[in-house]
Amino acid sequence: MNEMLGLYPQWYVPGIGTAWVMGIIGTIHVLASHTSVGAAWLFALLATKSVAENKPEIMVYLKRYGMFLLVFSYIIGSVTGPGIWYSVTVASPRGISGLIHNFVWLWASEWVFFFVEVIGVYAMVYLIGKIDNKTYLKLAWSFAVASWATMILIVPILSFMMWPGNDRWYHTGSTFDAAFNLNYFAHLGIRTAFMFAVAGAVGGIIAATMKDRETRIEITRFLSKMGLAGMFLMIVMFMWYTATLPPNARLIMDTQMMPKYGSTLAALLIATLIYFGLTAWKPLQLRQGFAIAMTFAIGLFGLWPEERSRESMRKPYVAGQYIYSNQFFSRDVPGKGVISDMPLIAEKGVLATDYFIPAELRTITPENQLRAGELLTRVMCANCHSLEPDGALRPLPALLGHSDEPKMIKAYLDGALYHGMIPYMPKMPLPDDERAAMALYIASLSAPQPPVIAANPAKPIQQGVN
Image (tube, rainbow, N blue to C red):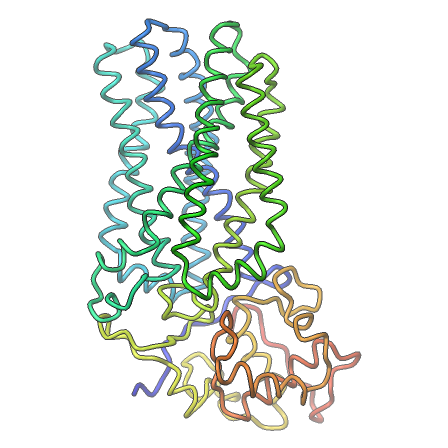
């Protein structure tokens, strides 16, 4: 058994929590990236239609849409992409390490196709009317295939974050066993459906400004049909997707996510279907402000709840159902040489085995108990909970009824969490003195006055340092 835990310093953002930082950046990125993939197919389909029916006016729309896409998808996507890498690396270093060790060549392949995609969008915009139609269509379909390939290669990683789907990967450590899991094809289907729907909505922002009446009608109806097809496909894929979820994810979805977001998502689904139906029926009624509002609604009331729900449904894991959200290994993975942290935590605790614990907190004393409790609470809880009573991310004091009784909180830590009895919470087999320190600190968050435990009050821990 290892003598030390391979953890990293804790990153905690007061108020909103680390998960919201990742979620906000990720939602913007997903909206931009899925729009770009859907738009690539829109380019290919409309370019083919323009050539086949000898309608050069469609190419005018594609050039304008392409210029808009360069800013909306590729600049925003290129900025938020590194933002995701930075935020997940500092918030979940073991999680991102586990994914890299499983999928490094898959990620490398995705970046090759992404390079082709970026070159492709510039070619689509600047080569309109400058090369022959046959060559342009070859480039358009190459652009579409390369764009979708980035999604095909990323979805295995996202699906593995939910779960490997079976026990085989834990013993083989194979990338293929991890990638093509039970959840993969359903997940790919739902994201493909979404890319068509959102591309149809975003495309309307430019279609509404077209001066030629017939072209505006034709393109708007094309976008509406594309959007409707995406929405209906999404409904089918969602039903398949939910059937591929692990038991803990189904439990969270049924008891927490759907009661919280179900009505919002249903209302958005109806509104989106009405939007595409109306613009297909009366395309000239589409206004740019209407299309912008629809795109904003899809992001705020559709994508944000969906992304937050997917992140929440993975709990208590962050990846592969072997890395807890608080970065501890929950089980052995022989295929990757991973050893569970649970026996070491139970035997020696976190304070004595985490490299980054200050020397004066290695042993709990009456003088440092509150400060040790703060540090332990951040390590064990802060990736999923705000520590402030009014925090935005599942505030820990509120979940414990704002109790200021350390004994009551410790009883909870001694029971449900010590034995891992809550499906969506990590098992925390901490020694008794560490559980007592956590209980004291959590109680202090709701206490009218912090409890006096020493002659010299504990110094607060600096943000971002353990």
